[in-house]
Length: 177
Image (cartoon, rainbow, N blue to C red):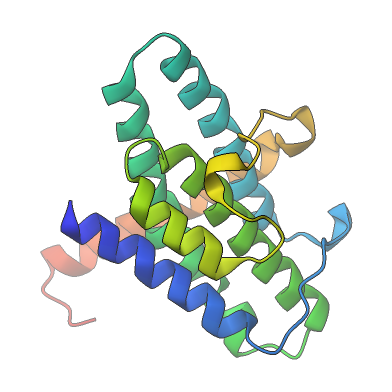
């Protein structure tokens, strides 16, 4: 859908703007914040699920999972959670970890989305990075036990549930944002 393509494009522009003039390096595991580990773990599960769905020719299920991940987890939650680290922090290590995670997650998500939206994913992929020539010949993401962080997933899901609860109460009581 057009709204989804715009959301993906805006997320990529957000990442590019924040990476401008910075050299982003792969962070050490202890430099990743819990929220970074959460989104990497969610992506890792997505990679496993989508690959299995594609191999079973469950294409509609696969694309819905990618759509839900990009829209809900990545754009609506992760990007909002890392903004303070990017804007209000003098911690270069934390900023680097957030930028690396943003870029890594979006690039892998684009690879999963590529069979469904080839022209858009190719354009964003080539604009966002220069390490690989084309998304069409890039390596398909693979599940990795190193990117499974059950504790961080559980912790962040608790935070998300609390935020949802607060938003619901605020809405029910007509409290302005």
